[in-house]
Length: 101
Image 1 (tube, rainbow, N blue to C red):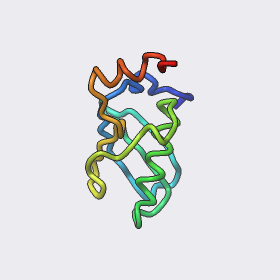
Image 2: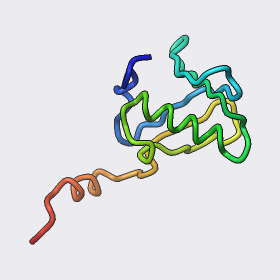
Image 3: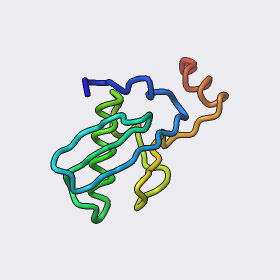
């Protein structure tokens, strides 16, 4: 995929369901039949595959990997990633306003 090909997913409070294939021959992100498939070459032990998926998916979305977290499915074939910060609309408004002097 091209750089930031999945940039339309960079929306706050969005959950991204991905199908993960560890121990693949190469790292890749593909959209097949409307679902996102992530192939990583690392083995699924001690969270190494999840970290590789997080890094690869964040790169394809065009955000920092620290802005993406595994929400559900740590050992499942289908995993759900999203923002680790679930901000209410009031919190977003407060963060967007300038700090008082």
